[in-house]
Image (cartoon, rainbow, N blue to C red; front, side, top):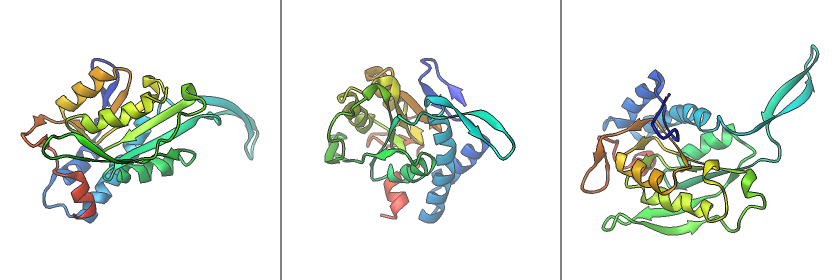
Length: 219
């Protein structure tokens, strides 16, 4: 794990992550192998992304004796928000690891001419009753221009959820996307497996891995 200067950007640096990233980047990797490698990475990503969730002490009885244990606070409101469609691959693992979480889908696609997100579905209907006790994980494999990330994160901030309670989870990030998201919402945490070199003229991450959604769903 490597935390960058502002303390809210974390790059997960691990041999298994690097190995599976090489599988994902390879243009010869088919859809089945791509999804399997992404799923393996997802477990490591969410261990890191969820490490600051508040816990509480409970008294339990093991088969041997009574003891105190820590568990995630029961009254915590956890929201998993995948940006459709590629974010759904992260969502499967996130929901498996945090089964108490609520799933809020964010449907948007990128206008290839303007590179701006176009919304077609938003599951966020109303503000949570206790925003200070709400923790959000916005999921998208790629943080490229930062436009979709900005819209996705901004939706929750408008509902009164503190920036410090929001984590943006991605597989790859471009410096441009990181700068845009972190300069607009400097309290939001960014978890990624790699910060790549740059964006090309089409707004794709270089070296990147192509279009994550197309490779996940064989489209």
